[in-house]
Image (cartoon, rainbow, N blue to C red; front, side):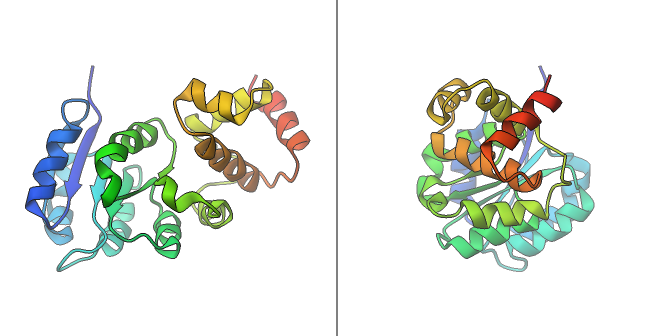
Length: 209
């Protein structure tokens, strides 16, 4: 079975080595870079599925690199790994087109969870950031997705909710937290311009048969 192809970008070599050991062998690390510019110069030939990159780097910061990446490889998913814990920065990352935002202080426990979630078509943000952030994240996602384009993970969440499962039960089934389930639910409602739970259930029954 082909492994998902990962590229790692961070200006701290020791951290890069640690991340590589953490990510392999579940994912295939096809490239490691210590700055955004060098990564961009080599990225096309590597064909990564996911790029994990720091925000604060010399020569080119992660956001600038991310903007270029979305033009070069629009289907490649971005996961920002950063020490920036402020919510505005996280919201900007998703507005840019990121699929994940993981804090470095919790990377050892969260990065693999984030990569698995993103690989399945979902989104991930460190839980410490998501309290009170649903609205901001959803507004960012609205600019990323066409109104009726649900990811496979969103469809899974919606189908389980429509079957009458609680957020806790959905989370247990999909091995994600109830907070992440809520995050997906309200993202879906914003994307589809749905205002009530009844409308959401009706949509699921009409479109997910």
